[in-house]
Length: 494
Image (cartoon, rainbow, N blue to C red; front, side, top):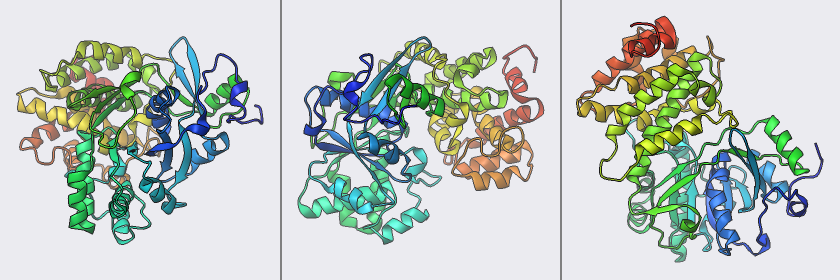
């Protein structure tokens, strides 16, 4: 591997086959602060912004913020923020260098610098991809007021640790300085993600000051959005291969698929880039698109992850090539599709057909263990919400509840048939205590539903628990094959 790094000084010497920023990065000024600069942001929002910068909208550069690790900053800083996006299909790959990230900040190292960037009058949009667990919700969906980081941020508003703390303190400073508020654009897989973050931030602010809470409630825009692109974790082999093609080292390239979608509610009082020119769908209501993505893509992704892990499949494409898992996913979609809005013009047949092609992409090698992380935070909106609506309409959500049971079984398998830390969850300590008790399937399902808050306020919750318990018993006694057989999938009879 070369000892030269990808950077402003080396980008023009890259092979002609590699697309590079065609604009003068020195003329770009920051207009967006992005919190949570992981691989997904760099494969998704940052590329749309890169397109806008190339079209001459040079006041929308990105300041990236990491709430925890310095790894991304340490990889990108020597590269002037540049990185390679590798768009891979089963039979081709294209490389593109993205230049929209101007600088990177690491919050634990210098929270004051993060607050300064958020308070900068040039910052008009703050976007977030911090994953579901970082919103610090209690089991009922409200703010977890007892979380240690929330308690810390309320006591130390000048030195926040959480997105809640940084957003609230910077909005307070902007208000005090007479600077209009920025727009907060949540890009995580939460139901009604803009409204959800708005509610959580108002709850947090109210614990500081009721007047500040009213300001955030009334004056700050929180449009919802739906994001969709599969982005597997980058491997050392990816780094070596991409750097070899570039002729310079890229410490952290990003792998992704050709498909990319972003649907955004058009509510930006402080202005926004002309994203619609580059494929973003700007709408009045993102809800139907969000539900379709959460329930059909994310729901089936979780199903493939847990059933794939229990079946010995390491990647999505290998799991989806398993005829029984493929048949199960079709059944899952058949249960979930009727729960979607009927009058929103959603083409679910085309959408699921595209999903099948995307899941079959052999180049991505998207690890089932990666998707399996944080199930307690993901399943409520991906699986449980659909199951509740099925029960309400008289449909038994057999396939949906097998996903919940498969998550429980996969948690039980860690340290036994799966490696101890093969995937993680914010509730791991409590889950480990439960799995260590070797409870009967019914008691285990009840305990896990209680712990995770699944369908907490649903009057017929016990029906879901009982369905999950039956599936869990099948998984324990005969593995995935037995659970599938009970659904009429595969060759075995129930």
